[in-house]
Structure formats: structure tokens, C-alpha cells
Amino acid sequence: MTLNCEENSWQGKVAMASEQQDKALEAALRQAIRAQYHFRPSEQGLLAWDVRRLVRLSRALPVQAVALGEIAELDQVHWYGHGAASPTVRSVVEHCQLMMAADLAYPILLDSAGRVMDGMHRVGKALMLGHSHIEARRFVVDPAPDYQGCDPDALPYDD
Figure (tube, rainbow, N blue to C red):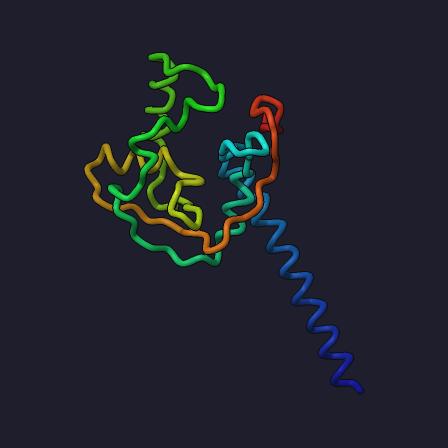
């Protein structure tokens, strides 16, 4: 009987510690990653995934090297679709600044088909530096989108 009480107490402490770790990780993610979304057009309208949630969901996935030549988005319109701004010199410079600041220590995120869900600035930086591969985590089953039929400008962003 005492053993069960001790075991329940221990399990409660482990659960509490795990919850505290999750809260600490969430706070760290909010500081490390600006609020941003991955967008895809669909029959249901524009789909959006919260990148912070994707990072959280991908934590346990293995990291693998992916050839830059396999990343189709390098040869597609990526940042300027979905009614977004036109590629002005200023907006291209802003993306270049984000590429220069990108940290290649963090793996990019790929969906189950190998399409980029997070990390195009890291992909661009790797390409500019002459790398042939980039570290990636790949979902086996794609997470459900956070928003469907959304307007990117109406989504919550950090101030």
C-alpha cells in the first residue's frame, strides 16, 4: 500500500516536471522563433501551419542530410505567392538579410512528400555557401493545418 502511494507521488512529480519542461520549451520557442506560418493553397482555401507548432511536433523526428538538389522550392516561387508582396528590391534584400542571419544548426522541416514546411532562408543560405546538403527533419504523417481558408494578414503575429 505504501509502495503505491510512493509510486503515485513519484508519477505526479514526473508529470509536473514534464509539464514545467514543456512550458519552458514553449517560452524558449517564443523567444527564439518569430511568429510565422507555412502556407499552401488547397481546395479549402489557403492552409496555414504555425511554425512554432511544427518545430514542437518535429522534436523527436530523426535528423537526416537532404541534398539541396532535392528541394523543389529552390526553383519555385516560394515567398511571393498567395497574394503576398511583389519581389521588390527592398523585399529581396529583406530575405537576403534573413538568409544571412539564418542558423544552419537548426534542421529544416519537410512534409511527408519532402516539401519544405520551415527553413527556406536556411536552404537559401546553404545554397549561397555552396553546400550540397542540409540537415532536415521529415514528417512521416503531415500535421493538420492550424488554419484553413485564411488570410495571412489576419493571422496572429508577435508585435
